[in-house]
Structure formats: structure tokens, C-alpha cells
Length: 106
Image 1 (tube, rainbow, N blue to C red):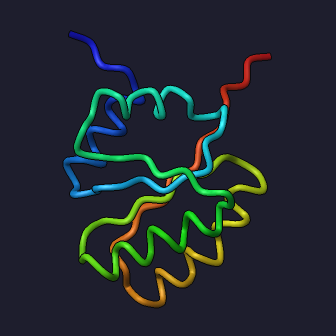
Image 2: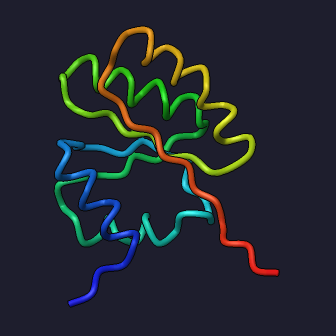
């Protein structure tokens, strides 16, 4: 059976000990969001702001010593995440941030 890229990404999250993926759902990574339906070990948690997703991942990593995952979209999404990334780096928290973009054909 062939796996999609989204399924491979979510499976990798699970293999690296991620329990949750904090995100602002976006169109640029819909295949990844769909893949969560096939991987019960990782639960997506929708947030209202990318910075909040980053701080939730950071707090989860600090509180549980497990990998915290934040998923955002391109452009302003990654910009808003940057403050939380800096905080996680300063605290040496085990966190993973993932930003996606749509394919360009032209």
C-alpha cells in the first residue's frame, strides 16, 4: 500500500513521540490534516492564532518532556509563530514546528 506525503508526515510525528499537533488549520496542508484520521497516536488541536499554537506546543513539551508540534501556514502564519519558536529555543524545549506552502506551477 502506498502512503501519501501527509500520512508519512503524521506517522513521523507519532514515531518521534508527538501526542498532539497544535495548528491553525489551513488550505496549504489539508492532506496532512486528512492524514490525522488514519493515525490515532497524534491528535490535531485547532487554535485561533499561530502564536498560540506555538506556545501550546512549547508548554506541552515543557510540561510532559515529549515533543510539542506546531503547524502553521505560510506568510503571516510563520511570522506569528516566530515568537514562540524563540521562547522554545531559549528554554531548550523539545518542539517541532512545521510550515507548509502550496505548490506553484507556472
